[in-house]
Image 1 (cartoon, rainbow, N blue to C red):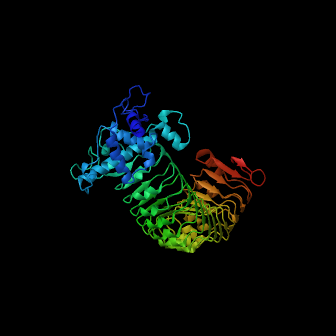
Image 2 (cartoon, helix red, strand yellow):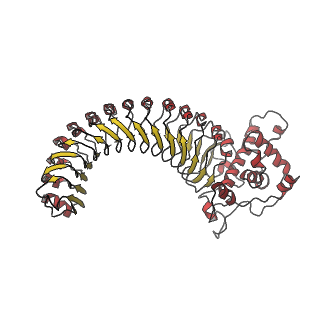
Length: 538
């Protein structure tokens, strides 16, 4: 038949490989270069039938001479010096057991890795899958391809780790069940073939992050039921996550961030009850955060920032009491901050900034005694600064700038001895800064500009000896800048402009311009105040 003729005649298109044996460094080395021995069509068809029966590949792909599946099967049958084959007992219709099962799986896995190889190194296949021209063949060269497409057992191919063998231990030259597939940062281009999901049913780790992979992820991913860690982040994948991703019931870490995924977060995500880390940030996910997330009782880290998520923050997140890190920033979430977040006693990081959140800052956040980093800036929050935030003795970062907060600066904030960064600018805060501010001994950054603070700048600021940036511009402060500012030897920037200050900038502060780190000093020295050392006069 025409098919048999084509099988015999085929010469596999060379793929680009890391230059391992090539001395001139110009021509990509290929392990089967120049091999044109006849194809064993009987063996070809036997393996093909088994691949189809186990749904490893589709018939249309295996019948297309230009496909990576066809080329991989030709390589396996004709060019692979490993000469793996199906056990005869299988074709006799008997039930396979023990080593026979292992032998069959070895064929499937070796074939699937060859498909992955051709899918990501064959120039014509990569160009077709990505829809663009590859200008330089070496652009497709993997950083490391040790062992690939050679006679070595796949357990010795770079990035492949097999389950321990009862006879050989952990590292051995065999074809056994693959446990981990890790080709991180290996300059891999193209799309993921579904064979990667259908042939490795005992794989526990799939790590392909920081490559140049693109395309969509098929529903076949759900076949990998023993998968515990899935890292696809840092690529260019697009489309929707498979709606059956919840079938991966053993998954503990799911990281697909820094891609181009879109559409809603699958409701089935709630079925991943062993999940500990969910990283989906820097994509284009849209819609609401699914309520099914309440089932993820073991979740420690929830990273959904920088997407297009809408709706309220689900109060059910407060039921995930193992959470230590929540990042929902840079979406279009709206409504109030749920008071239930105050039940997350293990929480260390909470990023809610750059959304459309409204209402009051919940006083319940003062219960988060382990909190280290709290950012709620650039929302539409109103009301007073809750004094309960002063209970957060371990807090080092508090960003609540860019809201509509009113009222005075709480005296109790002076108890926040660990706080290093306090951003409260661009609100509507009023009153005087309290003398208790001297208690914030660790403060390095204080940004209080663009409010309605009045009175004199407190001399107690001079007790904040670690202070590096002091931004008090665009308020209604009066009087002269205190000489105590000269005690702050670590200062790098001081902004005092757009106030009602008078008198002179003290010599003690000017001395910091000459002898220490102060390089940015701004005041209203064009009209209201005398400053001989300011870098910018307003």
